[in-house]
Amino acid sequence: MSATELLAPIAPVAREHAASHDESATFPSEAMSAIRAHGLLGLLVPVEYGGLGADLATFVGVAAGLAAHCLSTAQIWAMHCFQVDAIARHGTPELRDALLPRVAAGEVYISSVTSERGRKADLFSAGTPLHADGDRLLIERSAPVVTGGEHADGYLITMRAAPDAAESEVSLVYADRGDLQTEITSDWHSLGVRGTASIGMTLKGSVPRYHVVGAPGRFAEVARESMVPLSHLGWSACWLGTARGALAEVVRAQARGARSDLEYARIGRVRVSLELVSAYLTRMREEVERARADGASLSGSQVRLQLNTLKIAASELTFQAVNDLIQIAGLRTGYLRNSPIPLERHFRDLRSASLNHANDALLVGVGVLSMLDRSVTLI
Image (cartoon, rainbow, N blue to C red):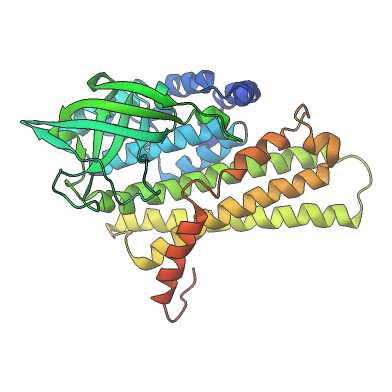
């Protein structure tokens, strides 16, 4: 099925409830129920486990299409897909057999636990260690931001591989909600993407050893081959979908009546920005697909530089596009919260894009990798 067909029963639900969940900063339960019911939790689950086994083009298309109606719902779903891809590609056979059919059946929504209290945002290090207890691993973890955490059925958690391991030796561990005691430690009063309900949590429990995803202490490999490529593709698709949807609504609203050259130029500038993001997103999606088809690694400096560039460009250009659309639409249509075109919500939502896996840190990485490429090999 195409992305459009997959979205047909879900997009109207997301759109109907987007404003109310933004207003109340609550989880978009109606849209997520529709996603569960129509099999989209299993979009990236291989067909042998009962999933849709979709390709990355479909993943990107669904993310963008859903984000045109509700960015919070789209990001929640896309982040779940990042976790599923990691498990499908790097999980143990026992974990895949036990978990993936449940995901495909709509029973398990997986949230990510990678943030850690008192530490800078560094995906590749962890302070809290796993402890071994026979054939089980003990988890005691605190995280300041867990997207959809209160509503998740399972969690992928980064932890230091062992008490005597270096902080760079990070393990990725799956835990069912039933294996954990959870407590909400902070709520989510954000400027935008308020429906993501990205609360603070503590999680305590134990899991079988086979719930480690990838080799113990080797989370960096899982991240570079799966979670980072999928996150940059998925987030960029979400942001592009929101901005594209906003442009479509503004163009329809502005279609009647005479337009000045200035208005045409402003619309043209927005269109150019979105075309550039779309082209780079498509190119990088094809690059990831090609590498996976060939069994090639995605950990090379060139592809890492380009994936970081995609995230930076998409986050900045889509936010600027919506900012420009507010100027085009004017005070009444563009700025008011009760406008029929929710540009004000899109503006607040997209302001988070450059902070989500912060652009400043990614730019440092791009700069370091650029110094290794003296010939400046461009995409």
